[in-house]
Length: 195
Image (cartoon, helix red, strand yellow):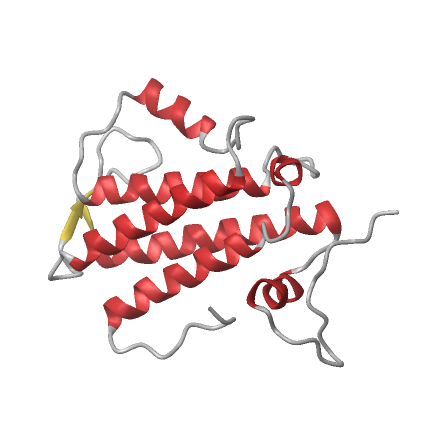
């Protein structure tokens, strides 16, 4: 996938394509990282690239549960899962995190494909302090826009963390991940040589 979403035929295709594009650039932040680097927290934040990818998958999956009106876990259990969702555990690999993210992406696409009207209401969960209490429902469309926003936010976080790990930035990483040829003005990222 290149740096831009290709032309789209309609709103549904566009929303899903932009969500996929943001997932793609989030994953690119992990391109070439070792497992240790994927867990690294090189800034004052407690965020890691691997943890951000894991969290973003967890969040997207949670929003699809809301869309499907699945019963929520008790708040204490949900918050424990939420906190664990930010951490790439010692027994997890980047491959595991990517596989889970792919699974979530497929689920999202399947669920959205089964919804005829993107204006379909999605009831706002009640009694959760970060959801508006004066809104009865969002739409499926709103949920997709929110997932794009949330994924883009975390892709930016991952870019900053990655730059702190080894100095790599988004465009050279994308060039490396996608096999772009070197040009006089762009050199694809490559790992630093060790002595």
